[in-house]
Amino acid sequence: MAPPKKTTTTPCRSWREALTCSPQNMETKGSVSSNSSEKQQISIAGAGNRLISHDRIGPRVLRLIRDRYGPGVELCDIGTSGLRLLDYLHDQALLIVIDACLMNEAPGTIRVIEPDLDAPGTELVANGIAGRSVLNTSIHQIGPLETLVIARRLYEENMPRRVLVIMVETRDIDAMTERAACRKVVEILDREIGLCRIQ
Image (cartoon, rainbow, N blue to C red):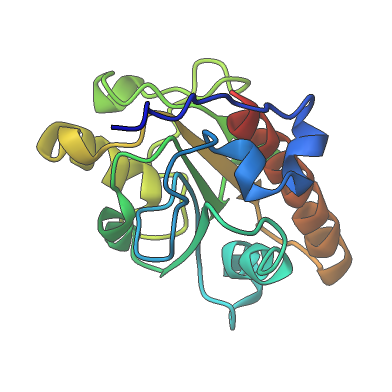
């Protein structure tokens, strides 16, 4: 019987390089390559309605990155119901959610949080928004954060190992500010996806 193949990995050197690394370099050599039927290890979920100016950040970013990251990254349009996010929880390495929010900030302000989903709901506070709850900031009745809190308690085995929520202030946002915010969100995605791929 032939000896088993020796497995070695060829890591990318930086998150920027990881964006363009071939899938073979990001997987263990000698292992079976991933295919379209397998669960993706990184999911990007965009919430919102592409027809409503103050609620289309999520769908617009998804459109911008449609062909940007290649294999291993799943793009999820969850529309205006945060509960649709439940369909995309499958123990992936990283879930990033993009949502339009009302935070009483300047239009286009972006906050990136890694929520503590085990905290009581009233104590779910964003990094960088000290002392303020981030629940009920989404412009949707049940936003992605509320859905994640529910899922953490009911579907723990499906929860991603890391969750980031990108919140964009869209109150009174104009077209130019929206475009700039979308570009900044893509820069954040580039960094986080690159870092996830080299870990």
